[in-house]
Image 1 (cartoon, rainbow, N blue to C red):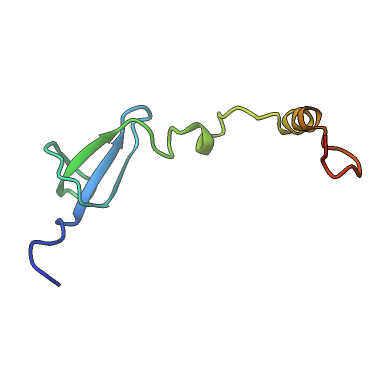
Image 2: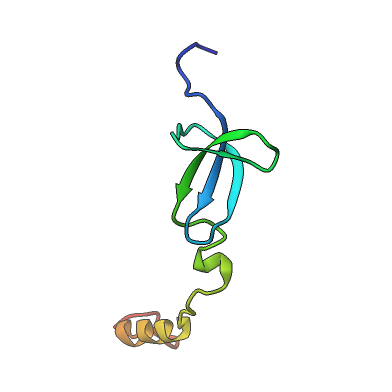
Length: 88
């Protein structure tokens, strides 16, 4: 592998500011702030606004999309229906 071609890849703590959860992973980011992790070591920390702990899709707080209404609206708009083959 060539030297000075790839960025440094090391441990980084990502902290979700909206839910207060944190997780340790590896990244090429170079955050300036540090935090002491559960294992007693100090790691750089990157604050994020959304993670799986706060995203509506993963928490179940998302809205339900009315797909049947969309399909019917499409059929009415383009006259797609029975055996006509979609010709309007």
